[in-house]
Length: 403
Ligand code: CTP
Image (cartoon, rainbow, N blue to C red; front, side, top):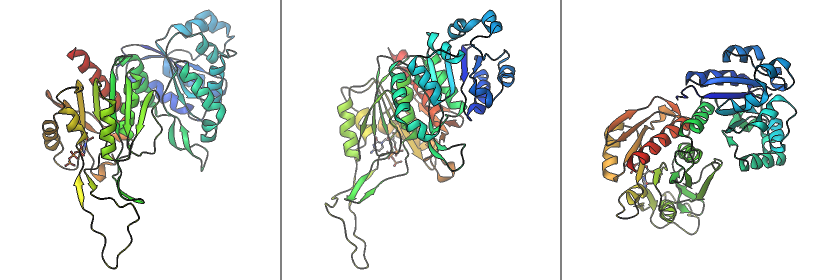
C-alpha cells in the first residue's frame, strides 16, 4: 500500500474497537500516509489523546470549542486539509449524527463541513447494527456518498455475543482507504462481471453436489471493483455473505444457471471468474427424494458442466477486453495454473494453493500468484480484501494501457 504522503484524518469513535484504531494509525503511516486524529468524548473512555497524538506525531484533537485548536487549525481546516476522512470505529451514535447532519461536537462538525471522501468502519453490537434505525442511517449515508468497510461477522467484545458488527481489521481499513485514494475512480465507466461462490448441482430435491468455496474472495473482488467506480454485476452461487454494496447481484444455484446469467450480463469490459464451479452435475436429477435401497446406494451418472470461463474467454465476438480466471490447485500450483491460462484462453490466472493445510477455503486470507503473458508474480499472504484491491488495481492499469 502506498499513500504517497496523502493526508488522512482519522476520527476515533467511542467503542471497544477503538484500541484497534491505534494500530490503524501505524498501518496508514507504514504506507506513507500523514495521519491526524480526532477523538470523540466517548472515545476517550477507551484510548487516550496522548496515545493517539504520540503515534500521529501531532496532538490529537478533541474539542469543538478548544481555543488552542481553533487557534492552531480550527475545525474547518481539519475538515478541508485532508485527502480522506476515516471514521473507525464508527459507532451507531456517530452514524446517526452524520445521517442527521448534527454538528454539536468536533467529530460531527468536521464530518459535516468536509468536502472530502469519507470512509466509515462501523463497529457495534450485532443487535445495534441490525436495528431499523441504524439500517436507515446506513442507507442514508450510502445515498449521501459515504463509503463503508465492514462490519465483519465474528465474536464481540461482550462475552458470548457474536454476529455482524465487528470492526474490519486495520489492514482492511487501510486497504479500503488506499483504494479510495489511490485507485480512486479508476474503473468508472467500466462494466465488470464477477462470478463467486460454489455451485450446487441437484441430486434430488433435498441433496446436491457442492464444494467448500465460501465466496469471500469473489465477493471481495466485486466490492473492490465497485469501490473503484465500476458498474459491477456479481453472479453468485449459494453463499452466506451479504451482497457487496454498490453491486448488482444475480443469485444462481447451478453451473448451467451461472453460465446463462453470465451471458445475459455481457457485454462487459472485464470478467473475473472467481466461482468454484462444480465440474460435474448429475445427469438426471430426481424430481422426488431418492430412497435407500437395500444394501446398495443409488448410482449417480455424472455429466460435465460447461466451462463458463473458457466459454467467455473464447467468444469470437463480445469477448470482454480482460478475462481473469482462478486456478485452485493442491499440487504443482504454477505448472497447473499456466496450463489453465493457455487451455482456457484467459489473460490472467490468479493461482492459489487450496490444500486443506492452507486454510484458504473459507478463511479470510489468501496467498496467490498472478500469472499472465508477462510471467508469474507471487504476492505475499494477504487478506482476501487486499488481494481483491490489488487485483482491481492491476485490472485498471491493464484496461488503461490497452486503450
Ligand atoms: N471455471 C468455470 N466453469 C467451470 C469450471 C471452472 O468458469 N465449469 C473457472 C473457475 O471459475 C476458475 C477457473 O475456471 O476461474 C479454474 O477453475 P478450477 O476449478 O481451478 O479448474 P477446472 O477447470 O475445474 O479444472 P480442475 O478441476 O481439473 O483443476
